[in-house]
Image (cartoon, rainbow, N blue to C red; front, side):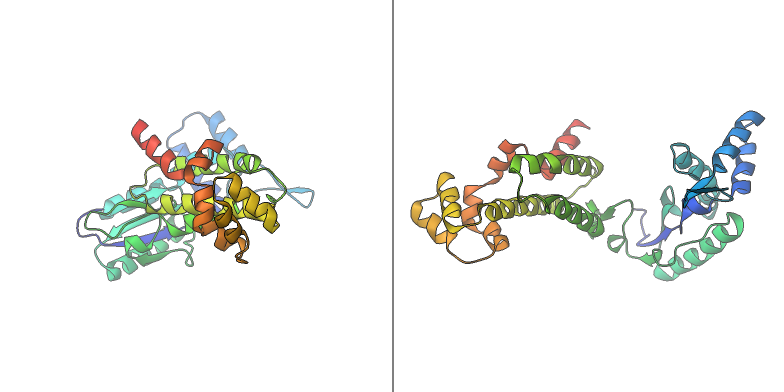
Length: 294
């Protein structure tokens, strides 16, 4: 973060890909592309019909989903980049998400208001007022990341990103009661591996450790529920090395699956090393390995 710029204008464009003005975009492309055939092809791509209710209707603004749209979106927003550079702002932008760094809240509010006007008048785009705000950088997020409140800020994972992962894990585990844990882990691993790859730039490990522990606890819950009865739970614990006395005491404690999944007896029976042997992806281990490679 630039020195002295302790506030951020966190700006989000409302339905950006649905509202791109075709004429403005084609005008910008015409300044760079001389071949009329290419321009005609892009215009046809932009105006490709939309299917709704079994009927095709013409597209008068916005872009269809496809690999070309992100490139075209950056061409549209080049005008915003040049305006921010002209004003001397420090900023980061990726597609329709943009953070501008300023020295005070008051300055940030002025910048947000003036950029809202600029985008509306010059680029025919609308700022999403509900998702845009001026705040301290550690209270805002950008592309799923945030930063720590330290003298030397570190990249961390934003809380909404963590909550979305937790929700996705819950959804995957809903039908896990009748499945083997190996199969459950096979379903989880692609999600965890992709998530870790995306957040490989994170500079703090607390969130990764917390998520790893939470996921293992959820899986211990699955095991405890699958055992169902007291005798089955006691046998499960004894099979995993607990003494008979401790296994029966734990199996008859009349506490719920979530409590038992976090208790010492299930931690002792099913430690991290056991999940590692089953192939469960560890977010922390994966991120650290990726960071060593890069």
